[in-house]
Image (cartoon, rainbow, N blue to C red; front, side):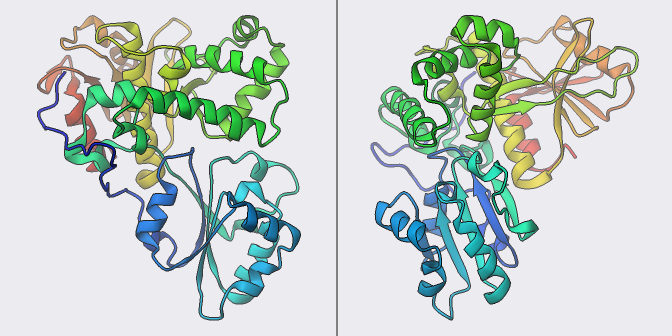
Length: 392
């Protein structure tokens, strides 16, 4: 499929992209944790949206050392008229949350607390502000945000991390990104000491992207004990690299599976970890990447706007529908330019349950059509309707 819009790129320079998150509106009355993988644009968004706001960057060694030795410095440095403070990479210094908590209570200050990992924040004993801060997740660029810059082939091949999507050398940037992830997220946090084993696991896990994972097979392929594999998957989830998609269990006529599926947060990162450089249309690899990209869009819409649960359905007899939005919309993804009746057998099987409002097939077809009560949609038509709120 080719796009009918000519993307506008600037060599060696990332154009400004309006993001879906409105930080000023979010922070008007409440503090927030803003969590997302590295380079998804948190710092860029803060710099654009919160001009003049005091920012504590905990990746700055001097800032980190000063606040780790005396967390109360935070209170001493904030001026009486300041009502909004940003602390970047808060997971590096969770003890600082005690001081944040106190300042919210005693001085009414609102905080934006950003991080690329939830691992340390989820460990027992960490002060998560007792409901005084909400959580938002930030994702790579979406169809809605890219607008005329959207190019399906580009997003499938290199992903949607802003700096990589607009890069003049995306392959080098993706290799650097996956390498820095191993160094910064895993080594720095002390999540595991066996980096070679984790590196082997990471490639095997990437090859399991968009599937129900057989943990025993992953353990064998990565040459790592099965118990360790469970821990490694938790590391990927905690560092926001991997998402778990739970099963939809409301079907009655056909018994559903209860195992989850797993998706990497970005198509470019997944394919790079798999050791693949180019993805050809018509291959199973392209199909998996296309499905992963649609998952990214659905997750982003859920986290930014709808808040509705996202699941998938698979019966013990082998029928499978890729995504179910809440209890109203089934979405099957087919990377085909000509969808057949056979391609829709799982959607038809699910429709027999009579529990959902609509059944959609997202495809590479050029025009929308109806096929046995199922709407077959070009990918851009689906994404446009999704972000306009039509699937609610």
